[in-house]
Length: 348
Image 1 (tube, rainbow, N blue to C red):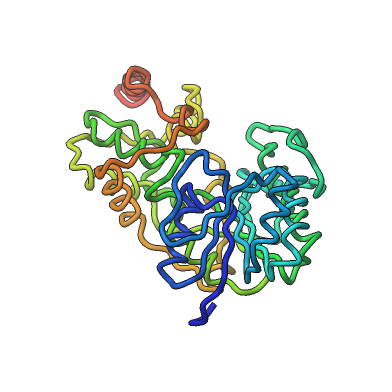
Image 2 (image 1 turned 90 degrees about the horizontal axis):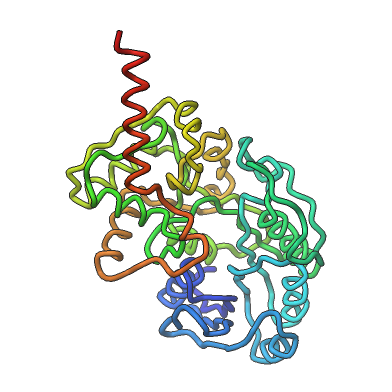
């Protein structure tokens, strides 16, 4: 967006990505407004906070009469018909709509490698919250909803005025789910640590600050997958967690994933960020990197997240946070079973 001061409206702006975008925009000299209910999270210093509920038509009328913006950045759209109503309200007063979507909109996620041309789930722009279905491990209502939100914004703003970002896993300070926090706390506990899969498996988590910078830098319509290049590994990430916490624990890599899956460990949550499907970490972000996306090393994300936690930070009480983590008792039992399995198959 160059050196010219620009006006930005952020829908949300108090949790994780929205908050990071707001802080980054203020630091870069943008004039920033946020639209939020104010029932959770915090207001960012230096922004103009507009109170309201995105589902309330009267609040949307007041929002649209509050100013004009060069771009709206929406980090909190989930239900297509609500997004459609919001886009219609903002179209006359906003030059461009930046929608933060997700790789879950792809029909093949997480089974297949993905590019921006991969098939997207079919969801109408006026769909309600119950549209779609939850597969295992295939499509989800969450993915259907996000696909419908993309269609809603594009229907109102057109493709040239619509910017769609499809991130994969976002980590970093202020993360509200707590995936990286769980691994850091687990390292801090020490002992024998169950590490899933191969340490050489390439992974693609992206730092929240890099997503924020990319969202602010774009000044044109288009669709971009937003993920790191995949040149770092699970070993790099968990190793960085071990080092930064000063852990005396030992990582026990269970590389036989077929055996590990047979233990009925819930992938992605019980051992956060572990998934056996080949598409989980195969998101092509070449286009985004060509458009200016830069990604810091995962060790920096780990270190800064640990610094935030050590300074009193904590994951927000989010509904998904309760799903995370294997209990110490279950972890111990799985490791003991692994020892017995190895002895039976490799001992004699």
